[in-house]
Length: 260
Image (cartoon, rainbow, N blue to C red; front, side, top):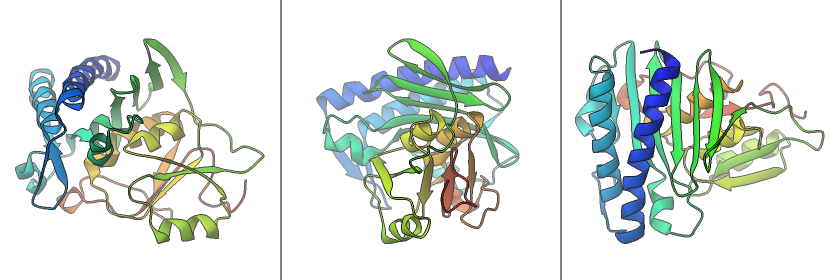
């Protein structure tokens, strides 16, 4: 399937999965703990069932690695595979604080690179989608617009950081790079704020999994941004157990700069 057609199909899948997430959000917040101590809800499970069903229909020959399918975490990834997080930001979902910072994530990986991604925040009705060679768009309340990273503002770069996992290493990195302005938000929306030109850099040193980042990473790259390791090496997917190391996601700010 061509990239634009696949993006459109996946957007519909993400919306249906998002509707399932919101039904649980409005009615039942009960959560159980997985073996790693992280929470899982009926929303995760319902959304994943919808996504896996649709991926099997659309692209039955492409391998899928999904957060809630533990067996897939031990698979050796082929050169082309999907990464799925049916509910990214489960802790934000459980807060029910009105911020709505949780997302449905679907990404396609080719040769270690995220080449296509969908990030849908159902509580905010914000959908971000992008692919290699086709650019990136945001659709909010039915209105679609192209998005692009912004040049770093003259007032200095604005960083975005995790609202649930901020750590001392992140604070030290921000201080060392003389970045004084920060925003906090949950889930893969951090990548999307970079892609839409609302912020300039996202440093992450704490643990993440590949399904947490791949879709947002794909949108950001399609919007002109980059994701590298802290020492400016390529940030690739298909690592052991799909576990990420530290990374720096950049919009208009360069990792080589200490000031714009």
